[in-house]
Image (cartoon, rainbow, N blue to C red; front, side, top):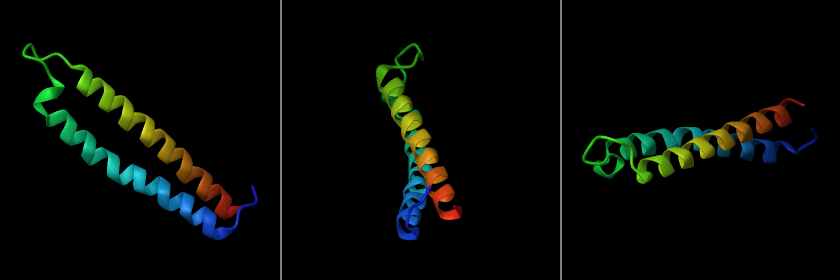
Length: 73
């Protein structure tokens, strides 16, 4: 892959940012009273946020890898 160094660095920074920012958000969601109903079962609030965080972290990891590969190549 032929990508200018500044753009590869932006991809690396963006991917790292996603991997740093989302886990604390997920911890807050899991502690939120709206994440479980009165019987202790997961709510849609929890499910939606877990999917959001999972997707964002997967895309962040992919962005980080693409940036690193572009920087090395």
